[in-house]
Image 1 (spheres, rainbow, N blue to C red):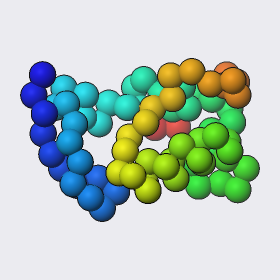
Image 2 (cartoon, one colour):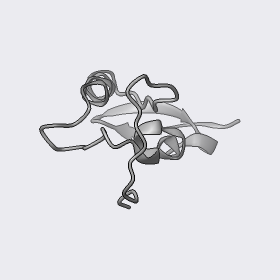
Image 3 (tube, rainbow, N blue to C red):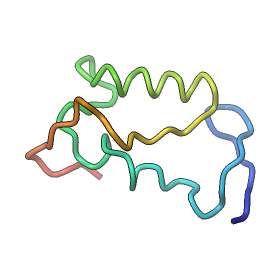
Image 4 (cartoon, rainbow, N blue to C red):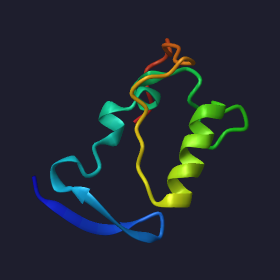
Length: 78
């Protein structure tokens, strides 16, 4: 796998080229959790903490397992 660098959350980070930008494809939050409400006051507390950690450290951390996941009956917004 090739590794590349780019600016993410205001800092230079490294990533496998093959997986860059694909975190949403694998993240339970983005897959359709009804608790995932980005930019809303009632967003999932776990998602909020995860995103805050990612911004603080320049990471991208998709959620693969979660005790709060609940299927959203409405289609995901793209």
